[in-house]
Every structure is written in structure tokens, then in C-alpha cells.
Amino acid sequence: MVLGLIAGARLEMGSAWAITAFRAGGVIAIIRVAMYWLGLALYRSGADWRQPVGYALLIVNSVVELAIASRWTDTRRGPSLAVAALIVMTSAMLGCAFAWIRVRSESR
Image 1 (cartoon, rainbow, N blue to C red):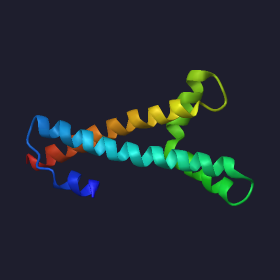
Image 2 (cartoon, rainbow, N blue to C red):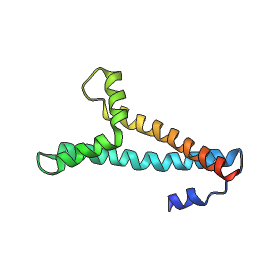
Image 3 (tube, rainbow, N blue to C red):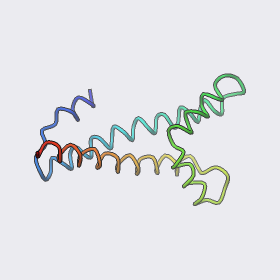
Image 4 (cartoon, rainbow, N blue to C red):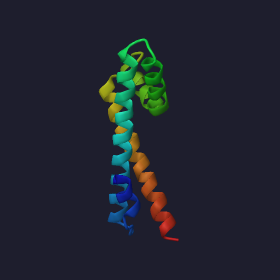
């Protein structure tokens, strides 16, 4: 439903770009943070099939953010809230890129 709102948004130069960027970044951030917490929960749950699935989900979803957070804190793994905040920040940048591409393609 939310993706439908993003896809159906009428884009004009100016505020429409900001609305589209905000919506796309928000959706991307929600999905990526949920995947991060799910991967973390699976990874810490036990030594059965859930641990490798959780590890793979963490690596695929947030390898860049994990590396930045661990570098900032000088620990082997970064704090969970710092990683989640970095995911939100990078997702906002992805939303801006999506809106820029969409406005640019519709203006031609």
C-alpha cells in the first residue's frame, strides 16, 4: 500500500520531490531496520538453523552500517541502536536518490 502511494505520487518540481524522498526513505528505512532487528534476533537465538540465517540477513542488509558503527566505537561489533540509526540515515539518502531519479525521468 505504501509503495503504491510512492508510485502514484504526482511529482512536480519543488515540494513534491521532498514528499517523494521522505516517503521512499521512510519505507526503505522501515524495511531495513525491521530486517536488521529480525536478523539480530535470529542470530542470537541459538546454534541451530536460525543462527546462519540471521547472520546472512545481517550481512546482506547492513554490512556498511555495521562496519561504520564498529569503527566509531572501537569495538568488534557496533551498538545496535547506532547501527539502526545509520540504517535510517542511509535509507534517507536512498529515498532522496529515488526521488531525484523519478523527478528527472518525468521532466523529460
